[in-house]
Image (tube, rainbow, N blue to C red; front, side):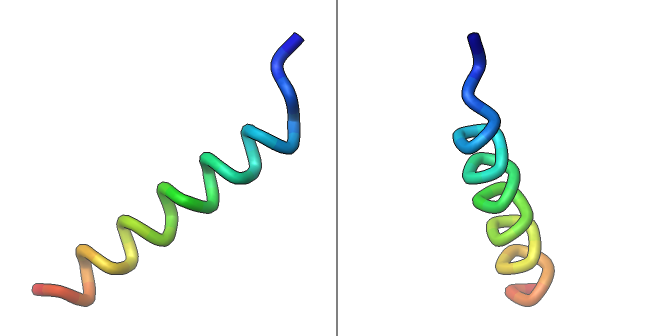
Length: 25
């Protein structure tokens, strides 16, 4: 079964990466 905690961490990491990329421009 997929861990919900892992899903939150992955989603949070993606959001942070997108925010960093958008601020980089």
